Amino acid sequence: MFARWVGLCKIAAAILLTAGAAIPQDLAPEVLLLSRIRRHLREELAHVPNYTCLETISRFRYDPKSVMQSHKGLARMDTVRLEIVFADGREWYGSPGARNLSVDNPVAFIGGGMIGTGAFALSLHNIVEGGILTYRGEENMDGRQVVRYDFRLPRLLKPLEITVPGGVGAVGEEGSIWVDPQSLDLIRAESRAAEIPPFLPLEEAGTNVNYARMRIGDSNALLAQQADSSMVDGSKVESYNRIEFTHCRSYTAASTISFDSKPEPADGTVAAAPVAPPVGPAIPPFLEV
Image 1 (cartoon, rainbow, N blue to C red):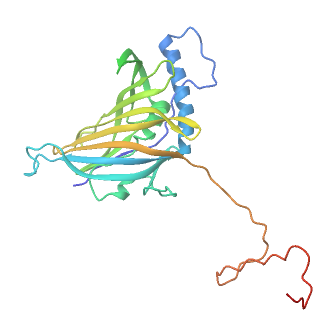
Image 2 (image 1 turned 90 degrees about the vertical axis):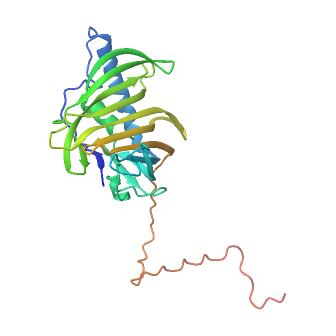
């Protein structure tokens, strides 16, 4: 049985407060705060393409029709490890340690089970750029004072594509984000599938992501640290993935320029490097030693 949860990255037009626009000062404090949060998170997302992380996915599954699982709950399936980077509005994947991350669908690395995109940076990108956010007040989260905004991503504007046994369809998303009102850093985001079409055999699906600052070289980057993803399809089969992002590092591009005008041999062999002339006075001929 195969299930796949993949978020689409289609940028929809939306009326948003831009960073450079003048903001009337008579607006409600929560509206002004939201504008600052959007601007701050856009700046953070602009730096995410400079980092690549190791994504470790511990996958679990529960099938009520299975005799082996009927009374044991979730059973561990396997662990998947991928290199991941967010660039050009998409998440790209490769094998651990790979230098070329050119696959945008992680399903290429598994034989079955649930896997998806979005937890690293794509979902946050969609919320910041297209989410309809509503202020819900201040809360205490693990002894930390935070502000909560609920968000909605309509299916027609920002669709999330879900593939389950028996159907493929687009859904909307709704959920909440929690932000530190002083640093404007995102602390946590929770999302769940909404506007599920009747023909799609899906009962529920959702993802929770925790964020924190991570020291990488000379930078202090705001990145996803850990995520939980779950889904229950129409046959009551439950899938659960626990995701951790570790071993994050920055990367740069390097290039070299050669002024050697000699053509390479047609057979593809590499010509020997020329021998440098001797340095210093020449030795007289026929010198006896």
